Length: 467
Image (tube, rainbow, N blue to C red):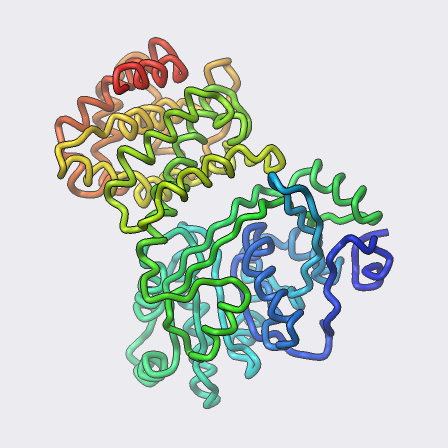
């Protein structure tokens, strides 16, 4: 038997399942980017609101390109199990907020109609950094235009991706897609729609056969869409919503609604995501498969602790950064998560510009050391070889894979030229860092150490020289 609406009642009593009606109401949320993260984060928040009796938070989930996942979810009536595991133990939950599904690439009109549906109050997005394209903007604009023409209410459109100022960027992208004939739509959008910035945080690895097997053992039925996550989650959203009454509702479910998203956003991007990128690249090059197997090594744990404490924290507005750092290190070590380093290293060219340069520039401005980031940048260059230190090849899953591998190909014979070529790229480092000679010198130094002695020895050397 597979997990479905028909088999829900057969699940063990210990599994938390939806007791609310999932079929009588139209969805109130359209979500773009139906991956693992959304299903183990916002969908579980909306599930909580639905369980409290508010029927407006059902989700119309949109896979942007992948029909396989959407078809699997459809076959299971939008149901899937989530294993929540941390130091407090393990529990399973089946959220029921996902009511309808479509694929944007093949069912575009259905998605536009969903955005324009009278019941829709929110659109949320987790399309990843590389997903903010003119095509996405046009999809949203087409749906919003239909709403405006039908005289419907405005909606909240909330980006939940790792982009600084994500709400502002999304709003600007949508407006840039407008034609001169869209003047009325833009006037309506400015008056009635809200694009709040938000920060979301929960570690959700890609689904694995191990999790599916664990789900079958726990549930007694098969689940092709099972996920594993940690107990911790955070959602900080700007108090700028189309319906101001939504703020109190979200807060009742544990969401932080605030006028200051930026301090949480930059802390997450630079501490969690910045450390994740560094560890993922180190793990990929040294042959360590998971984040937990990286942070479990004392030298990598010390590197991450010092990276956050010495080079990131001095430039953050989040006052509880030390507690946040300690919580992150504990979360990274969660043995249940099995968060693949290659999954996190995916799209590094899109992620690093958000995560590393602001801290490096902050250190430069204060005349302080940026050695940990310089070593991370050197490991990034070494990663572009596409083969680890044990001779095992791996693929670079990155929009810039071809150009990055072209830059890195000659690093054994012309290492300095490769460093200069990588650090000259303003799409990676911004306009200021490429001109900083000291940054180039230190990345060159650590790249030499990585090539000669390996990543582990380079980290040990850094820890010894920067004690």
